[in-house]
Length: 187
Image (cartoon, rainbow, N blue to C red):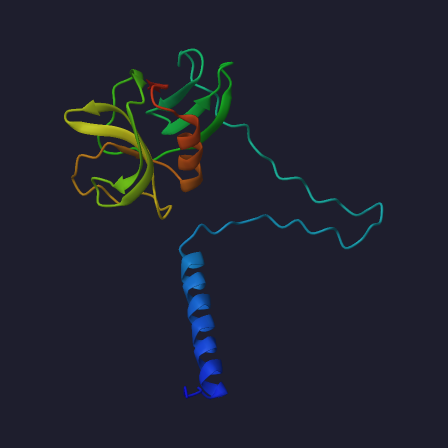
């Protein structure tokens, strides 16, 4: 005849398992992005003299640089540290700021030559959405984002060609930029 476990043992085991699951999820959530939102509260009075809250003023996204090419492409501005995703009609479908590495490409036209889902960058950071488009003095130049969403640490004298971006921007660039797509680098 098999021995039965007392009910307190079952309850203790299930409670410990549930607690471990909640702790694991909390740790995982703490390492993810933390969204922020503006809170707009309605006025305390509906009288005609009450002032409505002002709508937030959003500035227009930075304009696509002149002479950046034609057709569907990725445009990378060295001086503005910014990328534009340009659709087939020549209009910017999106733009975002980037953090360049210590080695930069020369202005010109390139193509995405290799896409790698994830790997460890030459700075030791786990990265994803890696898209290579040229090489300068033996250093690969590629777009990527850190897996944990962090900005790159100081280079400490290393020659690094990674052009990093926020995690959500890396995902957008990865979806947009197939192998062979033009990358226009401008000043």
